[in-house]
Length: 233
Image 1 (cartoon, rainbow, N blue to C red):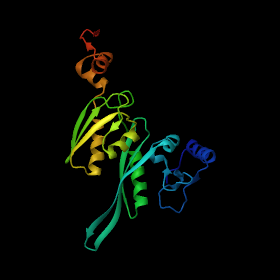
Image 2 (cartoon, rainbow, N blue to C red):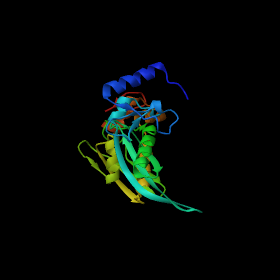
Image 3 (cartoon, rainbow, N blue to C red):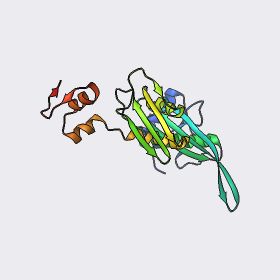
Image 4 (tube, rainbow, N blue to C red):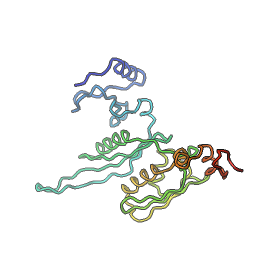
């Protein structure tokens, strides 16, 4: 068992004292249960060092349980039932991720999926902290997704499952259409893959040999840049 640094142990003691949380019980079968802290009133949500998320940010995360279903594995001994869950977690400020979990009951499956989603959180670029940088077309398996950037105040006019993801990310203005398969699991994975394919202005400037300010003016204010580095009005 690895020993914790002295400063980390002191930090956990401060968290326990300030936020009235209790350490995880020792009877749970984990390698190092001293790393976990349980939030009072929500025993299924645990904060631990392996999440790579500060405790203050962990308390502010938004969780959306989008898929919960029963699955069956066929073996020579018969059918082995289990529960599957897919959860999306985000801070509402450009960071989000999704996770999948399986267990014998739904509560544990959701807990495992939530922890996997927190570990998988990534930064998603947003234009003006409200919409995407450009229109996107992306295909994942049998699901084809089309997303359009929209003006301020337009709102999120998309499928309900995509709307939940936008709330976790912090996207406020977006339009979209789903073609082909509407399987919720494939739709969620398609959305995250599509948002990661965005080309931000810094990438465009580097690829075209222009200054970043020129690219911003060209694509977002209607000003044509010139190779000399000065924008042409």
